[in-house]
Structure formats: structure tokens, C-alpha cells
Image 1 (cartoon, rainbow, N blue to C red):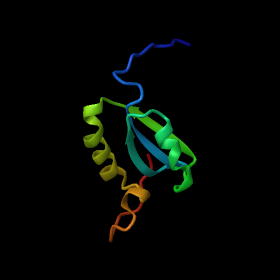
Image 2: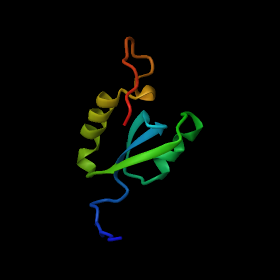
Image 3: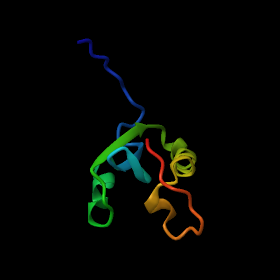
Amino acid sequence: PEYVHMTLPNPDCFIYFLCQGDVVVYVGQTHSGLYRPYSHHKDKQFDNVKIIPCKLNELDALERHFIEKYQAHYNIVGVKGAPKLKAL
């Protein structure tokens, strides 16, 4: 196999998706590395985490975009008439 070496602007900066199977249940952002996504194990049910590295100044816009796209359960709890969950 061929490996590609990538240098990310900030390897600790990314959008993360907490998933239950292939369904996104929460979308979040961090610039603190993997600690943040896994800190949710106390209050959210998920069995895998997916990440998209990005630049610090893109975090807010990307997080909003993916929350709207996936309508993740834990992001929309309490929103009346919220649509069903979508797969990643």
C-alpha cells in the first residue's frame, strides 16, 4: 500500500460526528483534539466517531452546515417537528 503524508494546519482542529451505526446522532467541533468527542460518552449514546479536519476559522460554519444536513438527534432535541435522523 501507498501512504500519503499530510500536514494539517492544526491536527487538533476538526468537525466530529458521533454515530450510532451509520446514523449521525451528534455533530460537534473542537480545537482540543480527540478528548472532546470522547468526553460525550457520559451523556450521549454512540458507537463510533468520524472526523473532518478543518481550519479554525471554518469550524462554526461547517458545524452549522452539518447540523442542518444531518439533523442529528442530540443537536435538535426539543426542536418541535424535527425531521428523522439521516445516515452519514
